[in-house]
Image 1 (tube, rainbow, N blue to C red):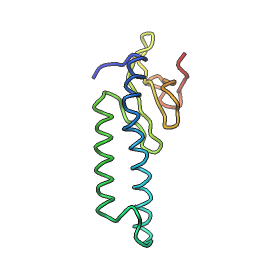
Image 2: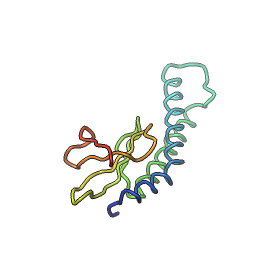
Image 3: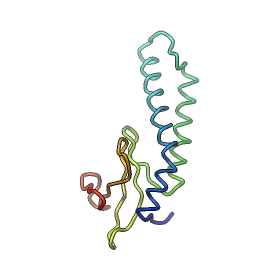
Length: 120
C-alpha cells in the first residue's frame, strides 16, 4: 500500500468508523466475558467460552479489515490507527486515537506517539 494524503486518510477513517465502533463494542464484551469466566461468576448474559472464542475471531476479522486499507493498527485498548503519509517531504504517520473526533494529529516516524502534533 502507498502513502495517504490527509484528505485520503480522513476519507478512509470515515469508511472505517463502523469497523472501529464494532471493535470497541466487541472488545468490551470480550473483556467482560473474560472476567466473568476467570472469576467463576454466574453465567454471563454474554455467554461462555464458545461466545468468547467467537468474539476473539470477530476481533481478528475486524483488525484485518483495518490493515487491508493500508492503515496500521498500532493500539488495541485504546484503538490507535496510523496512516502512512508524507508532509512536506517528511515521512509521518497521521494518527487517530480512540476518542478523537477526527483525524487531526500526526507524528514523525522517528518520534512515535510522544511526538504527536496537531495537523494544521
